[in-house]
Length: 514
Image (tube, rainbow, N blue to C red; front, side):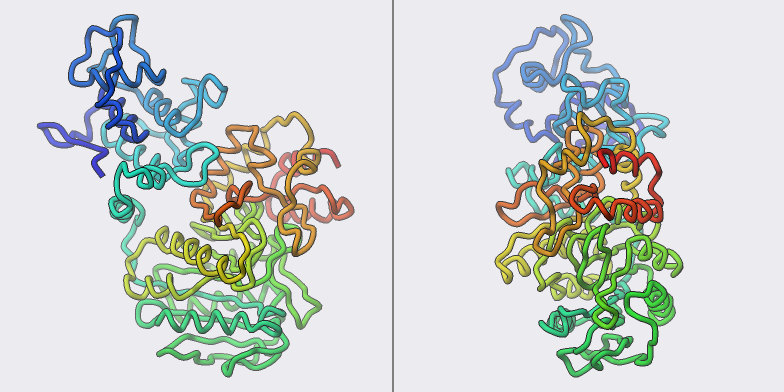
């Protein structure tokens, strides 16, 4: 990508970088190196050499100062605090606007980048390169695209170069294939529209074979629109040799019962052990308030988010991806509830088309390249969903990938935030999400709480990849429950938030004004 260069002594990863080297890296991350080298700006410093044009450009733009009135100090070592301050400016955060201070730069950068930099014992060129790679994968303040995506879109480097670099830093271990577990509560989406049958055809077109094992459990619907599944039954299947093969057909517990989900996951691990597990939760979602599924055989009963968490947690499985092929499940509460059960969560904060995910693309990619990174699979899920489902339904879509390890940082930021009015009042001024499916008191988190830079940073670190269809505004990747319209359910929801594991301070903050 041409961002990190060596010297006559190699990359010198253990050496402390200089102020000049760090400035050059900052300008490259900012996409301004070529502009800086062509500029004719002047600076007041008498000690600049090869770095002169970089310094003049950055000084004129107000992003660097000298060590005194006449010296830049380009050969002096730079500290971790100084470099964190630089990259935060690149990402749109500002000391003058109160986003961070020099003293808080490292801790705030840890929130923004989703990596704990406070434990770094020394700062060297290797650390600089590591931080810079995280910066490229981070969304600048109040933007949907990552910095790397923005730079490739403006031809600072190619998309191919970005993707090749990602393959080097994304996969922390070598993986061979995956087991995909699909828990399908068929509901009226199958009985009336045949949507599960459509998705099954997409799965088979992906041609999963040796590298991709797919197991499915059905239930919760009156009638199936295919030859494999028995009407009104709960069954287990395996995709094999281009067909769906039945394993079990006498499951007695309801699809809306958390024990049914847990038992399926335990069974799946025994049947198809793997180094990488992906869980698909199919279909109908009603957010933190309404839960997941809509069991047509049990008065459309759903599973609460807290019940989902306990069921998955008791299965002794850790998922690389937990994916909701459902509406409205992309919430901070869902992410927090599942933070110990998986690495990434894929979900939509708003309603989704009935067509849901498009399975052929990403399942085919997994089969053809079993070592593909989980992050790359996640991006394929987002991109194919946005392209196929949105176009078919002719409706706007949003979906994000969330790094579940960042959910706790966001919750803590909300707990300590001070708002100039109650969240209920802020919700009154915001757009209700999922209103076509009902009223679930769910709102875009940044739209309501974006006045806090720390909350914005933490929310963007959680929802680090977001895909919105063209023209879709105020969808920033993660939603939040705020009691506003269904006030009568506030007490019940407080109990659910408590069951999820959220603190009394968080609940008090969210329910302020009620």
